[in-house]
Image (cartoon, rainbow, N blue to C red; front, side, top):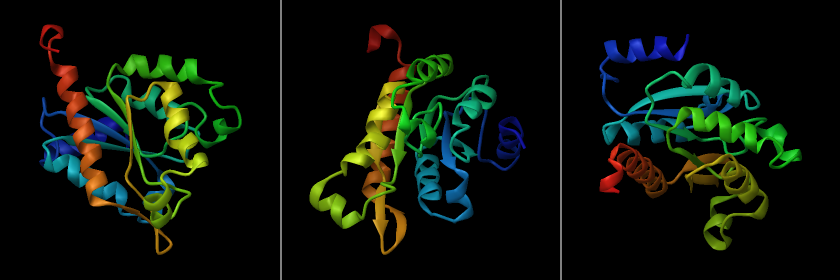
Length: 193
């Protein structure tokens, strides 16, 4: 189905009301198939704060197609990627960092909504993250490449624990706080900012 089909379903099932703040959450299809919980935890936390969530899942390199074809004409208030990397090229673009940043920036400018990255550390154990911070390669994927595209904020949701990618509750709340703040700022008149 399409995002519009999902929104119709969500309206019929009480998960979306016209005028309710809508957050598009981009995730890796692989993580849905693997039944990783962080996507559901982020969605539940956003819904608890009054946001409707539009889930969009891709394999990786086609994220820009999802943004251009599916999100550009929808009434979203924020775009959250749980993937990191660049919007154009995804994991494949990491061999040419910044190569497509102008294309990505133009694409995101057409959305005209805050773009945030909220993802678990895909290459790092939670204990190492807590002890030493974000590993340099993970930082490139999660901070540097999205920042070149125009990400307004990035939050590490969790890391690998006991062999599984897990979210940490206070980090999920931090991500939702960031989304809430950016959406509130976006809706304020310029004179109020």
